[in-house]
Length: 250
Length: 250
Image 1 (cartoon, rainbow over the protein chains, first blue to last red):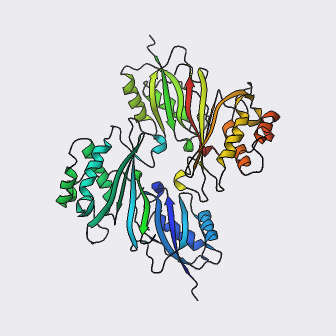
Image 2 (image 1 turned 90 degrees about the vertical axis):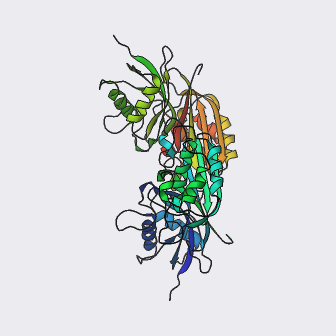
Image 3 (image 1 turned 45 degrees about the horizontal axis):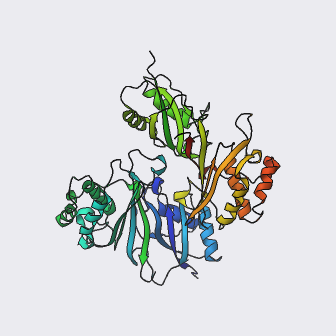
């Protein structure tokens, strides 16, 4: 008599006060808070949540995708409102729908999009401090964009990160853009998948290039080295946001 | 042997964790933190800070203006960097310059600009929660803009707020605009001065009008009533930001 429906939800969160997405033995996580909220709507019976991306401590999301099974008798819009009423203020369900047959938020995904935000002004910004990295010296977005062209496409990205389990380090970087809006600089990367800290190490390497310590072509050398010691240091998680997860036919 | 220089500074702060701008007997304030930071750069001798606007608890600023006198021997750029190094992360000095002769941040000001930010989507936004008001129902910015035309110019604004001391309640509203950027709605008001909670009561009245509980012309009736019971309720401080203070010739 399992009447559970398979749901897919798009989630936004302010990562500042979380130890990342994935449940940890100690500490507050996004997955943990989602499971607690869903259990409250399920007569205290546990509900398992799966996520598309295991965002790190301090990383934000506007387009994280999760799924879960729930026996709920009151309509999807009512479920979304009920979830947003019981979830803490730093997590919200932006969209809720029925999952397609066989859907898995991580394994069905065809690509993920991350955005890294830099506040590029001589002085730091108190209002931007939770959602950006402050870089005081003027950054050259053309040089940074030129460098990104060297890593577009399918490559072994071992220099930029580790796989979560012992899998392959080959990924396909589909789009890579830099845009500026006044003092804001945005690095947007879309790939088939990302290795652990891959976006933060790519952005860290772009900063090395923008400071003219290395030419744009150096990014290709880093890639070919297949050695994590070759890349620039990972930048802070505050500037990172998972903005979208794409699926075939959606 | 007082070598003190008169400085004018433009300040940004995240108002979330402050009991407002003005020093209070108990609790953390922007003025208090600025005075503590300046005293540290003044061999622990107290430095008095004056501000252009007494922003309320929870209200933000990107363009608050302050002044102070300090005997500092190392150049203005070094002073700004030193201040930003000792200030807490939720306050920063965006600009530092020498004050003109006879300058007073409050009494020399010719106008102030406040912006009120609304997140206008069915679901709340965790990343926007500290800097906006969430309004779930779609707002009609044309109706709101039409209403604002009825209060432009010099009027007795007693219906929308109290003066901080027993002064006149006449103010000149110079500009009033509504703009939308996707789910964001911005109300921007520039006036010769603002009464206590005046922006928040004007925005609260605009919400009443947008919900079609009252026509746009009702805002003129509220104004003419000269009675605080006539206006809509004040909206939350989270969405409010002091963005600029203008002075003659600057």
